[in-house]
Length: 249
Image (cartoon, rainbow, N blue to C red):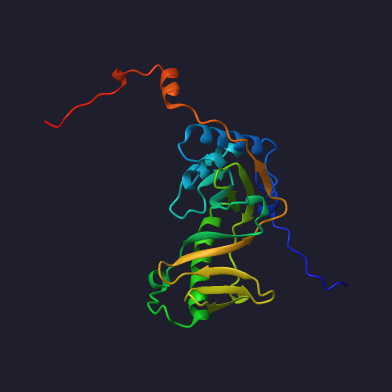
């Protein structure tokens, strides 16, 4: 009789499926995203795509709802699946192997009344990770599937990488925390020694370090000419009657 330990079959997880498997984006996703980027480049004075704008574009590209939340882990919703969205700027996105995802402010002072920022690194780090785990657990209680979608973008938005990771809770005992030369805390996996988290005592910023998966979507966009402002206004048949100007009495 084999002693191999098998994963249990869970009814809810196996019956309630996400809209698509991890990183297996819908077939038209890449072209939809590329079209949105072309539009941005044609209409914006500078090539920029941040935060809420990326959340809205991603939601549109997969047919989901954009519902920004305070937690920041479930801003995009599709039935039983939710996503948080991150953007990262890099000069050569297609060559990036690891990324740092700023993942909220985890404050032991607020959550545990731990006011000593010079306390034992392991104790402080465990508290930081526990805050993350609690935050993820509260969102996972509402959704069967929780992911983070990451956009790595070039400075001119013509080269992109898109990938997803499962948004998970991390076993606290799997990591060793220490201080680096800048006074920040770093966590490494006990088994592999791989650097996984960074936490900055001043500001409480928590960063997760992820490996870019091989199945990431690589996209290149041909940058369009920017629309001429006067031509756009002319096409809209703009006239001064659209504007009302008054003064306070």
